[in-house]
Image (cartoon, rainbow, N blue to C red; front, side):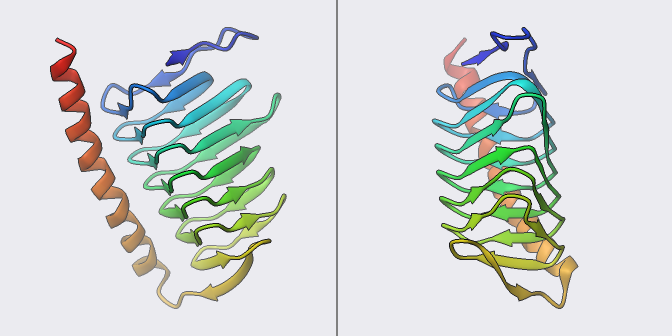
Length: 179
């Protein structure tokens, strides 16, 4: 379901080369760039704020992204947000970021490029995750700094590329059965 915001009537803007699962919900002032995929059961809600999701990002099954009224959120390119994750804005997630399964990202978090948030981690409000780091735990803490930040980013990007291809297959399938 893709609908405008009941409050300000702003509509989602979704690039035609995206895969949006039939039972995903996208509401309000949301911009989704080329190659991104939004998987089954995910909810993206931004009634009175703004949300921009970059290229080739994967929002996996049953994830929730919500942006508080009057605030903004930006999610970069080649980001993988794992199954059942919760991302609550305002905030910023850079490029080549992996948000693990069932992670929680709270208001005001800044996650730079090439970062891993481990599965089940809870990133507290206003946490700043520097590039090339791994965060884990409840609450999440810095547990590792990677020596080769570019190599880390490339590994995350490779994971995102799998979902890009899978999203293309699903889009093709759903387009074919709707004709």
